[in-house]
Image (tube, rainbow, N blue to C red; front, side, top):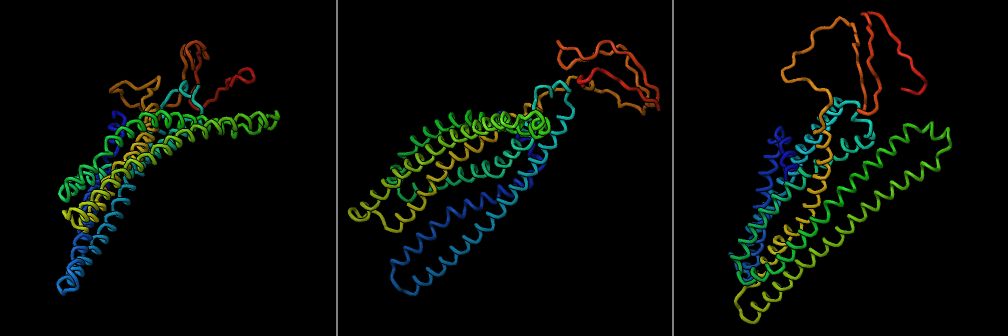
Length: 377
């Protein structure tokens, strides 16, 4: 949750876009809740026969239904467009911020950080943030509102059937909890493996001349192949969990649908306590009732993927450079160009010194060459 809240702080500049998207979500939810009621009204008018009033009512209801579909289409465009604008703006800022911070880090930071690993975090992991802001969070809001609205409506239509429709919910919640606990560690491992693969390929392409010169192609091909299949097997393991749980969610919801259809048919045919149009509207709402619950599995997966990537990005942003300006440090004045090293020592790692007690001066406009044994860098 801390990572999510920290990530959302970076969306403040795009709040106008997200506000438009959020309002559109609210209107879309309203249309989705209204449409089954219009259909119920049309079916009820059909039962009145071919009277002029019934035909006029059907025409009016049909126009209302058309207007609802058109309004929902417009709002869907607004929601998707502006949420994507906000999402990709967030990605752009995070990439820029990550790159700027990497430039400030000390050289020691890069000693054990492959370039491909850093590229994976700055490019791939930040791209997942768009999924969170443009897909996962809007879908969560939409499905939550839809679930609340549908719950109220199904209980108002038939409280008995609504209670039977709730039977699969505890099983769905338990399955979602199990899915959540299993998928996040798997996705975090997959993203780390992808970073290792990117680092290996980047290093090999940079040193392709040396690989060919020393005829190391078979060895490097084996290394890359091993990394490729490690990533592939990790991804397949994650997809296996997804492939198991998502059909399970749908099966559990089908139990509720079966109970509603069976009991509703009995109320119509045997007891006469329910109209056919009410059962049709109830079944339409039932699809909306279960869809938000089952969709939570996909939303949880998207959120966990994003948080796993954001965690890797924040690891970079939370790394402090070894040398940093003091608070309130004055800006450097215009320099004359003179360079002086006075008893300077330096090391990438504390136990391996590189420079020890170096003293020299370079006057403005002059040059100095530092020469050492071949291969010392």
